[in-house]
Length: 112
Length: 112
Image (tube, rainbow over all chains, first blue to last red; front, side, top):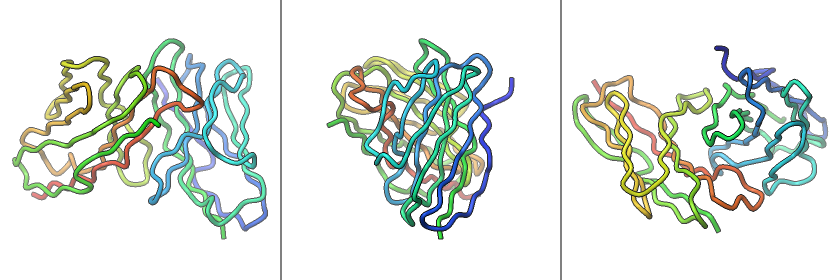
């Protein structure tokens, strides 16, 4: 069974630009969560989508947004990039009614 | 506020030298406590879920235990390939806009 896939794996952007990251969950998983991981803050929850609806949201500014499609694939968008947005962005999926989350390899975003 | 702390921050062991990692948590009702392993540049890999005090789970050289305030990850006779960052996370019973709350992790190095 294929795992969670994320594209692209690496991105370099400049301040003020916007970026879109993509996540394909494990087949059959309907919940997709996004996390930001930095050396200083660790893993921080961004948002969770279930059946195309945002179910939970973390404490991040409105520049961070996401969506989920009918096939459960999800995208995350960050507008007006700041230097502090440099991080590893992780996507995790889980089946309905199950607590465990399974993570993808992440997208490493560098903002210059 | 839901919080997870982990100790020690870093741990160096000789191959075969058993030890334990600690995860202390404060949460408004616990839906589950999770252990993950993360290798550099990769996404976290799921290890265990624990739901109630007294519960134990084992996998190869790893054993996770849970009390009402903390969890331990015991590593018996570790090998160099056990070197990684071990993350603990909790899922609050009432999400309040958060999904998983992660601890900062313990960096484990096992020397041959």
